[in-house]
Image 1: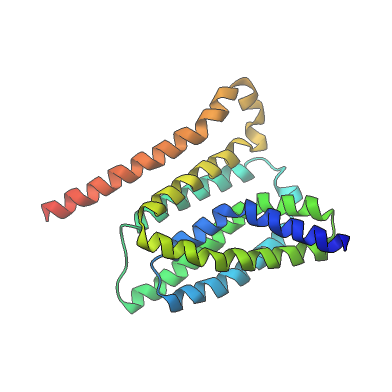
Image 2: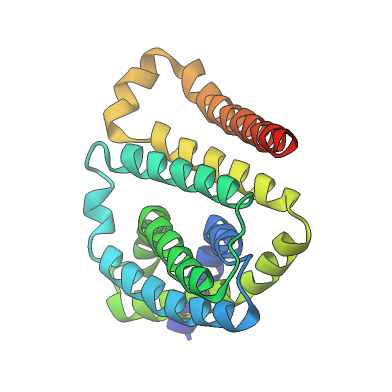
Length: 224
């Protein structure tokens, strides 16, 4: 009974921690047809489970190494920017759509490698080293997460502004991860205000980039 309660607790906590994952899956698959989206969800579910299983045995060690969170955060910000720009570049044609499926899977799996480190560390602590319990909770929560992101993808297809909002949330979360990197701890002890300000600065910078990118696209369109 205690094991079952722990399993429910870990699944619940992982779903809460995985809000960014759902955003990424939804944004990456928003332009796909229903058939293609189902493929992405099936392959993505399997891929994310494998990634989390691998990370489960590495998370407690990796997160103490300097630069892991810093580099991971930069990769997530790059992903957020890429998702914003791809929103303006919808591909047409079956051949291009097949590439989009691969691109969606690449974005989803790469982002989960980065985000999964923090999530898996929390799961490892809650499971108290019980590896079967940890793996079981990961599999259950990832299935819920991936298939629940279907609604996010549909909403983003109907309301493009949600893509911008999702990318900004992702940027903020990524910067929060970066400022907690062990390499930067001593630096932020001397400048604590900068640690608080950086997530906002990065988020505003990405928003400004998006505005300039959209204006440039419209300017080119009107000139042609």
